[in-house]
Image 1 (cartoon, rainbow, N blue to C red):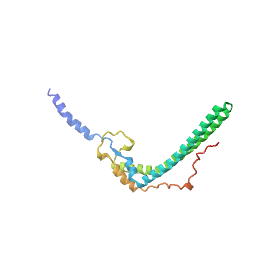
Image 2 (cartoon, rainbow, N blue to C red):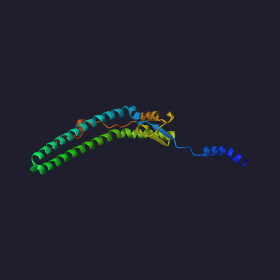
Image 3 (cartoon, one colour):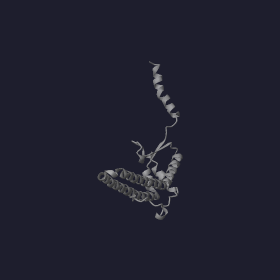
Length: 194
């Protein structure tokens, strides 16, 4: 039994020595990008401009879709009443559907281009501010808690949102000019060919 006692007694000291020389674990911080967006007035303005533009584009796309559906319903009724003209009416229906799909695709492309043009400068500035804070604080990993990262519990000290907001406010972002109506290419019409 005396042989085992030094082994048992010496174990905690040996473990303490190993843990003192072990490299530190990863450093993790949290940031809430919703707060970042809300803290920069230009980002809030850009978000509201984008929302208004997307609402207009959505209304036009809905009108194109509704118009196409109404036209297709009319063609279906005609095809039921005139069986001899079904092939011609089917070709016309295909043409109307193709035009509607092309117009809606053009609207979606325009919406995506505007979303990218308006949000890209802020996203770039936000990434730069987060990266600067991460590098200066020696942080290895930053999680965005706004995106639903599975953080069950965290010490408030690991939330760097306030420090990133301060850095973000110091960055001068070149916000895209919101084009006047005459500068923008015309939106596709919601009218379909007869």
